[in-house]
Length: 122
Image (cartoon, rainbow, N blue to C red; front, side):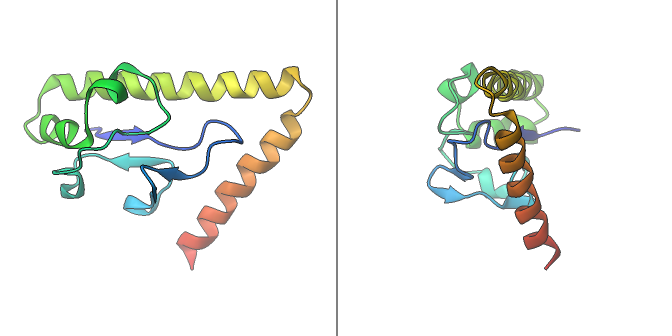
């Protein structure tokens, strides 16, 4: 059940880099599976640029531990982060619409996803 944290860039300024490394864990640059043993000793935040409660107060290693011992708090912390991440993404969409750049925003987002999928298929 669950264990995924959203990490995709929420605006055109953000790069697909998280904690200084291109995040391609599990072959997907939109989310990470924190149940994976890769995160057992990872003391970094889920997303560097995120200011949600989860990212500000807990590490990937702690979330990995909570998930692996089936602690209910893990799902709550992931829900806080994922909801915050989606809200930031939709805020970016609204801002792009306000300044008349939604088409550019959409094109860049789709371009990044296509590049990712092409790399996965090869």
